[in-house]
Structure formats: C-alpha cells, structure tokens
Length: 184
Image (cartoon, rainbow, N blue to C red; front, side):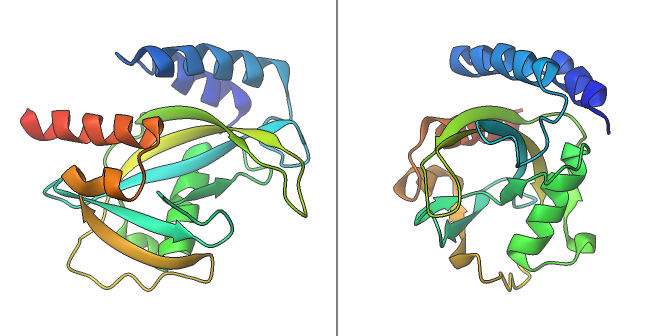
C-alpha cells in the first residue's frame, strides 16, 4: 500500500460521528502533506495502525493493558515505514496477542474507525500525534491469547463493559459501532 492507497481508504471512509469526521479531514491533510507519514522518525506525528478485535458473536472486545502507557487499548502500533497500514494493523495484532495470523480474521478491508490522539513525551520520544487507522477483526474468544511483554494483561471484555477499562471517546465510538453491527 502506498500513501495514495491510504488516501483512497480515507476518502472512502464514511462516519456519522462528527469528531471522527473532523479527524478524517485532518488525517487526509496530514498524509497529503507528509510523504514520510508512516515513518516514526517524523517526530511531530505519524500514521499508526490498529485493530478493534471482537468475538465472532460481537459480544466481546479484546483489550490489552499496555505496559508503557498503563492503560487498556486495542492492539496496534507504529508502521515503522510500512505504507500498508492494514498489514501493520494485522501484524501488530498478531504480535501483541501472541496469536498466529491464521487465528485473526479481517472482517473487511475498509477502515473501521479513525482516531487522532496525542502521545505524551517519554524518555525516548517527544510529545507527538498518532493518526491511528483502525480495522475490524474477529478472533475466536475460546482460544487462549498468549500475549507478549508489551502488555500486563489481555482480557476479553463484554462490549457493554468496555468503558470500565477504557472510557476514551474513541473507544466508546468503536463500542457504539460494534453495537450497531449487532443490531443489524
């Protein structure tokens, strides 16, 4: 995937959430302005990829307690120069859950959600912005999730209880999208 392919994905993404619509406009402008938008060396901000992992019945979401940030999140991470942001999201999901790719089923190749958030400065990186492109995947909630050293814990959380672990607006937006899918 080239930067133009990400722009095509962004162009085709439609949302009824006003905040996400504003993020969409900002993300398109950012990607157009920065040829190296996938590169972590672009210190003020870069594109990241993540996955909203749900059970096949769409009743549970998989959350990881991130070791560095001490918060619960969906799997995801830096592109490290890889312009195929879908591949990045799937790779990060496999790495952070410890699951083989054969256990991760992409629901579709469209953007599920888009978020822009600030990462605070730390010992390695200055404060910067993540343009996080999120895809929807399913994992069988009956299989063991081994995890890796980036997380303290990994849990399947009933969708209606996700806010107990993470009540960020972007997470609640993905919960709402999941609920709407179940209603159809």
